Length: 154
Image (cartoon, rainbow, N blue to C red; front, top):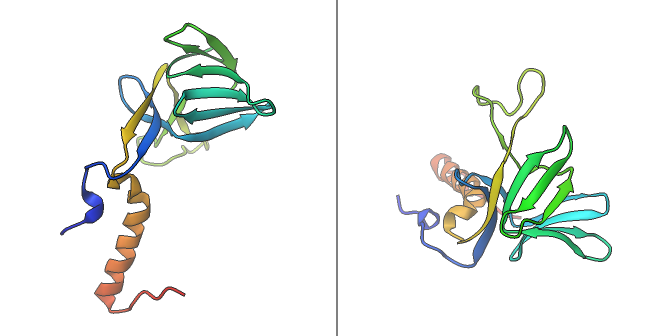
């Protein structure tokens, strides 16, 4: 089967990601992803930034981050290049399914693992980055052809 979305060559633009150092597991893609206490965490061309909401002052910036748990809620993020650190209640973590494939166990807990070191990366966007859009549409159109019922957009 020929699939224009299956190629691995870059098509346009780039994807900015925060990944676990060593495993390359994805922590977060480019965006603003945490809000609260008058601060936002942003992942962009500059790296991982913690900014004051009102003034947009950068309180912490890093492309390579170390994280240690200070207690149940607080974390210390360290810029591994400059040594600058920042205390926060936000986690750099990876959520994975439990061994049985479920996202929560019987007690309703998620399988969340804190990341010790993370790094910023910029990579070319590929068609596989659009799979979340193209895969459901492909299934819809294949089913439409299989049963002879056309897809009608209104």
